[in-house]
Image (cartoon, rainbow, N blue to C red):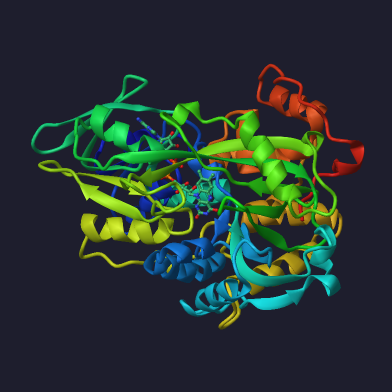
Length: 511
Ligand SMILES: Cc1cc2nc3c(=O)[nH]c(=O)nc-3n(C[C@H](O)[C@H](O)[C@H](O)COP(=O)(O)OP(=O)(O)OC[C@H]3O[C@@H](n4cnc5c(N)ncnc54)[C@H](O)[C@@H]3O)c2cc1C
């Protein structure tokens, strides 16, 4: 899958610049409609914004405050679709929203009523009031919070969603070129020639620029166009801490500055806390600051029964929201919707803005322009790994649970936690892997697993597998990381502070 030299020389229908979720979704949809596609990504696939999100498939409850009903409805409907087509890497996620005095209780209730009713729900439950004095979730919070609402959204492994889309695109004939930068593109009146960083060239009839936070600069410097909308680059950072949750609920916590932060159960032993908003000049500059780390700790501690300290932070990451610049609006009010811009005089389009949640509908909108006579097909077609056998009328989520139970029963020689970890990462691809034997343990991962990521998922280094194909970087410790780096033939990376032993995994597994 990683080497497709014969595909290189053809005149492609479409070249896509950028292998984040938007480029990947467009590549899958277009390849499935019979277009010949080349997707070129400067770094690792999904290695930029699309692996640094909060990972929510959500309508965006807080966008209702800014009357963004159209966006919220579109995103709410899409929750059900994504939970169904990618049931191995996504699930419904409950959120506790404490009544804190930052917004009146009637306003929260009205917002949640709208949220429950703006779009049809099949898998995602509706919201309800909660007495925190009698609910398990309340035990993680300061006892002064007694009332809350429980509402539901979805959660998805963003980086794996990118890979699943690209696997399907490649299976349908797309050429995928990771770690290759497009440096320049020329249109000679009939076709584009794209110059690549490694000196090769590639030809295509049309270009889609899906370079996320780089979209404006790629339009200008690669395509030579000045008509792409200006972007507002807003950094958002997350910290990962020891687990603060007692159950499966996430928390949505209102802050006195009008913002909200999420605390989400993460990888069984951890909590993911985010996010921040900080304007930056260039996407390459993205890095969490001391101030952001402290902001997130303080924001969480306003609510937690047992406060967090800096010593509880085990990992962090920062991403850059590629928002459409709207003069006069602050970060919170700026739209999270996307826009497609056709460049004047040449067959090229730039995609700006968007969310993980809406990547599939964005791709459909792009295809309406690229291939107006073709039919949408991705709403009901499971992604690779999510293609579990389904009974008549069964949802993807239910079919996934049934399939996992059968797999666990059939593979009784393996630890059920390990089976679950592999199944919730690879989906149906876990079945042949387990049946064929996992091979030697390499620093807490397995040889067959690492081989799979190299052969089928374009992984070339330890970071790809530790932080994007999986999140095993949180679980394997420094010795494990060194072993995995050695497996890839790399020198060991920098030694990071280890977690207290009680928070470490004895065997690799996730919740
Ligand atoms: C902090 C944060 C939290 C978020 N939380 C959520 C959430 O919970 N739910 C949600 O739905 N959305 C969320 N989002 C939004 C979502 O993550 C983004 O909208 C989405 O990931 C953008 O995807 P993309 O493909 O446009 O960009 P990217 O993922 O950034 O992909 C663009 C790619 O283009 C490549 N590229 C750039 N220049 C070139 C070149 N010259 N040649 C080749 N390749 C090039 C880059 O390397 C990059 O990989 C969040 C965003 C942030 C920052």
